[in-house]
Image 1 (spheres, rainbow, N blue to C red):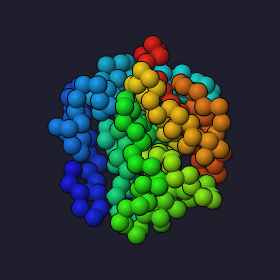
Image 2: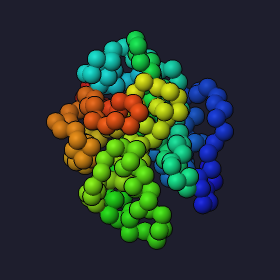
Image 3: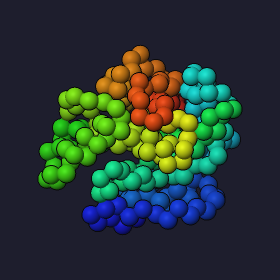
Image 4: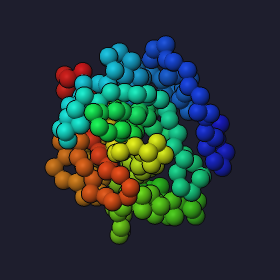
Length: 232
């Protein structure tokens, strides 16, 4: 995917996957990112090797009464246009799920050892004068106000906002942003928990969704699904 002032979005035309290697060509830096033990390769294997939705996801959705979710479609490396139109947010996976009575738009961020991008403080220190406005737009989407903790991972802001944007675009009943962790040491779970607390969510636990107290169009859930728990 080429990139100049604005991320060039792929055409919304999809072809069936023939296995994990089909995901390779969609990466921004395929030669660097496609390695065993890295998040891109791990998430592709987890979704392709199983029989549909990973079991840890089923457990997470069941924790909030959303039972037997079915994958309507899932697209790797999905780009969501953000409000300022400058650069989109590229989720490791976007999935549209159906439960008994709800349609749910889900953005998935795979993690092994990688952090959640630069911190907000470091990201804001960049040269672009548009960054404070972009952060403010993301916070508006997330229905949070006040000063932002600069130690939070910036990636978590735009990935979670992407779930809301896609839920509104597909007219889904709810949105969810899920971190799919492949780390044996639960690396970055504390950072995720700090972000959850910033959104007003306490007592975060693995393989459980939490409802974020927002009022921006549809319910928003966040969660941490642990691929090391033995459930998949």
